Length: 297
Image (tube, rainbow, N blue to C red):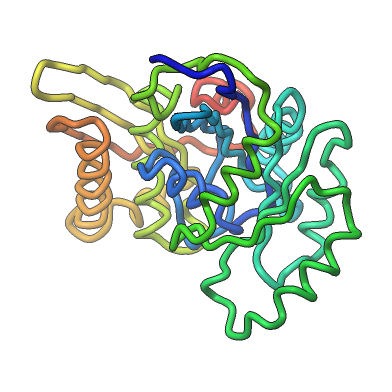
């Protein structure tokens, strides 16, 4: 890849409380789905690096878990530590909030923001505003809360003002050659993406609480010339949760696996054979060895 002398490359952490649209923002910036999304809060558990290369810059985005203040477990402690770690050592931070909402959960995240790294306040979900006349006073009220490098209102889902956001980010990236090829969109393995796609479908097709009690392990991943064969296990904490995921006559599990497979085929560019089992593993979210084996450490 030939680059000009003013080419810039840098790392950008996307942070915020749960359910403000961080993963949707990443997917829309890349125009490719690599990070799972859900209307339920706290969908993302891991940092996910997404890579966007344009003619004058390479943006390496780090999509972090939503900073959790409500529920206490070993898993959530690990996730919060990941968020804090990723706010340091990057070139820019995108602090994402929801338009017309700035409550104690956002304030908690804001207090964790480093003072020595440029922070851009991203006000998401403009499309949900019924009266945009309230936006300017809202922006003015927040401008004094922190020394933001810029404030950019957007609608991630409709891609509104994403080019303006990228321009604001580029101002703070160092002049540097690209670190990745122009066709690379993530440094996460296909194994990881496959497990996340399965977890997303559990969020979509089960009740409010169940997805938070599940974890996915990829037992086998064989990449053949025209087909990828994947065997995966969904771990749950209780036997009744296993029954919910499997569903009547196995229909729920079939639905989860079918839609996850379709997402995998779209991203991987070839046919996928996916087989999924459900197993009970009690209290896995507080077990350090289990979390390490499942990729949470």
